[in-house]
Amino acid sequence: MKKFDAFLPFLGLFLIACEDDTPIDAPDPTPVEYTSGTADFTNYVAIGNSLTAGFSDNALFEDGQLASFPNMLAGNFALAGGGSFEIPLMADNLGGMTLGGNPIAGNRLILSFLGESPAPVEVVGQGSTEVSNKLTGTYNNMGVPGSKSYELLAPGYGSVTGVAMGTANPYFARFSSSESATVIGDAAAQGATFFTLWTGANDILIYATGGGTGVDQTGNLDPSTYSRNDITDPNVFAGSLDAMLQAMTANGADGVIANLPNVTDIPYFTTVPHNPIPLDEATAGFLNSAEAYGAYNAGLAQLQQLNLITEEELAKRTISFSPGEGNAVVIMDEDLTDLTGFNPALTNMRQATEEDLMVLTSRSFIGTLADPNNPTSINGVAVPLADQWVLTPEEQATVETALMSYNQTIAGLATAYDLAFVDANALLNELKENGFQQADGSVVDATFATGGGFSLDGVHPSPRGYAIVANAFVAAINTKYNSNLPDVNPLNYTGLYID
Image (tube, rainbow, N blue to C red):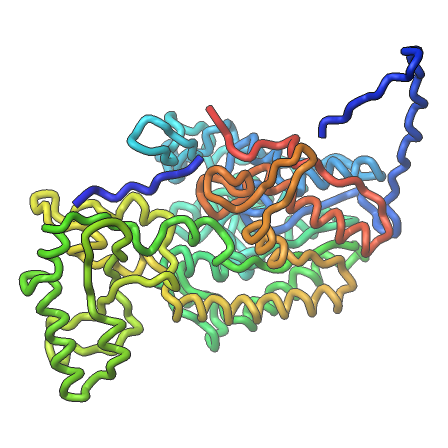
């Protein structure tokens, strides 16, 4: 069998001279006077998670922070009375972090062309950002990568001591005002006249990127009992968001809030096919034989003949391979009926379908050996993929239910607090389905590595993608507050860092 490798694909204006060729001086364009409308951009504070911080290519680094959508907005706000915008910059462009000299976060990704096919790899070197080297002052970009909604309200979330204990966030610990500070407390203390709030993605996303290995905590109002991969209870999410908005609007600040995109629209779940396995005739024959999956299929057939399972379930669970390309991987599926009581060999495995979403990281795992000394122990073929490598339809439904509830809450709070609203869900769906055409005729879309909209981690936008996000915020602000801020030009920002 061939080893599986994911292969990554890779207006001009004309002047017409006058008949006598006499040059004509064009009049100077009338300068645009930008106005904030009814908003006040004097002191802008951005609150959120990695999407606010400018996280991309699986890391936070200087250039990415400068290309964050809040920094783009701040540049526009400066045209209409906006003040300075301070960012808690990382120490370099590598992105790695240390605590007490020990690495605790990896470097950013770049696309390497050194292997058989292009693949993301970490930039070489040790990042010089030491978490315990506290920054001083206040910072307008309060985006904290990895944060969940309720964590932005948690005392001690910026504790350096807590980072070592796993109870605090290393990114916030670098610039928190004290060991007991909260993100929202530090944000509100700045007396913002205008704010953006975009948070809640991690309350769902970490469950999804983990292949649904966490628990849906709907009904559990105590987030201190949650595991990292769990989905936050919708009421906990709603209460957290409401508390943030109360704090930020207490002194009359205006702002804009965004809803959450669907995880099925990001390259992390749309890049690796469910059927990437090429087989020769001999290998396909062996896998279908009684020595491999033939015995499993026979056991299922026996249960169906005894009316212990339906024909539908038999068809869903039967595993079959064919010579050539396009064989589906074998996965474990916890939502299948447990048949081990009838036969211990009938575990919860089946072949993936196009409804299953393989996570991006599976591209480098499928086709490897579970046992380096056993050439037949091929992950995804002879050895089923564990739950962490795939988001099944049932798990997708769980994500969708939480997303709908969260987004309903966000829309309702936008109305209740009279804020501008950005439909990021629709925006990211449009990026996936059609892309956004640029002034030079190019199209930015959600294709992994080559589309220009997403970075190499498959989750976070590229700088060009963040520019598209910034323009959605600009449009919402202009509509709500009668400002006339200009668009950001996405072509001024890279779609992919090339080192």
